[in-house]
Image (cartoon, rainbow, N blue to C red):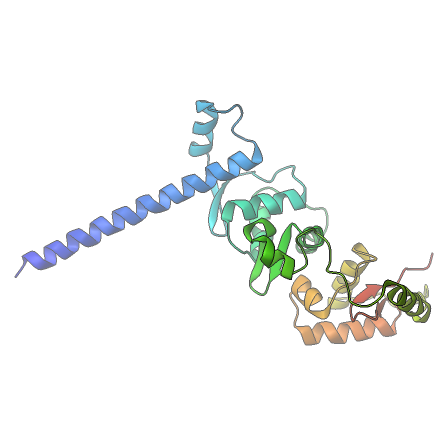
Length: 251
């Protein structure tokens, strides 16, 4: 009667030990992968460099462990690609920002906006893809899937219709755009300020309400009301494609 519980206890202990070893191996593999990408292993086969990586203190970074200071001195775009390469799964704006901050990346301004801007630059270049549950590297997905999103070559998919007609429409839209904001226009604050910074930082690119909601972390309805205010103030304008653009400031 007592042998069965003892056997179950032994198997449970054995399983726990195996899971612990598996977690340790996963962490070691992730750290080595990140070190290889970062060029921290020196010459190929250098045992001292490898031992240094394995014995170094690590910090939690989302779902993986990365060497402390892995992002120190790197650009935001390089740090994002390195981090996503290491974790090998989609990550949200908040998870990416926290991991990069912990890893030594620095910014003189608002860190969240700093990372968001870098993510949208990478998206425009076709290096990353944005999903409802986070960001992922384009290289994780096959060519057919990337082609559906129009990022196989880093360019937006061509619009339908004749080129001449589209060019004429753009000229008419530019002529009907609101006049630049006067010097006496009130300065935006809160969500208005965040959206204004994103639009001006990426001028002349346009953003949809969904893009701006993801970038600011605000609800789509809040973003929509903010854009209405900004358009009335002459700070932003709505293009013929439905996207919103920054209006150049007067000097």
